[in-house]
Length: 254
Image (cartoon, rainbow, N blue to C red):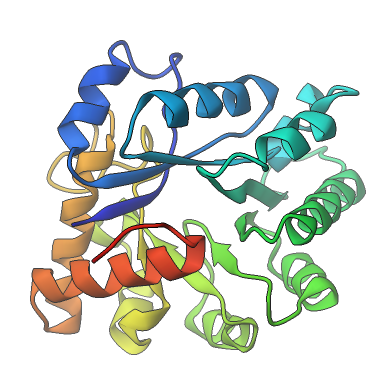
């Protein structure tokens, strides 16, 4: 079995959702919301498909989409047994003119919500390492499970984050020729710290780079990880699946 621990399955991105899910069966995917609309879609898909689990949250790039009922909706969704995380949430300072303080406040509000419902947090962090680190440090407690989605910082930063028992989401970027930094991280750290993901429909791995990504392509990430670690693909799938089941409390027998 393989688990894509982070993908997006919006009708804005795929013409045939049924085909995308069927292509992944009998494996598991965890789909992520980023605003009210996609969070509602997540709820539809976890109800419809047996191999789909979900997480809900407000992405830092979607602050403008917040409504007075957004947090009330999140709290309702988090009661569903197939909603297994709060995400994707975090900080994104990449573009000029963003309100960093507002992003930080939204991030912290959602961490508090996750702790109330005993759910892991799935963090998007771009060009914002120090603030991300300090917010995690402020809210960390041993029961809080943390995933750094699409990890893009240094090996030294990854080692620093391990004190919070973080898991690192590793996706298609690992297969890119210019991803030496991420490849070094995968070579250096124990596989016990990694989760497989695609971030579909984005970041399609080689050999399909340049096409629309989909969850079944997570196998190419596993193959590259196996190559870098010098172990079998079967071993990568076994360990990362166990990691995902533990991190997201998935009711799956391995």
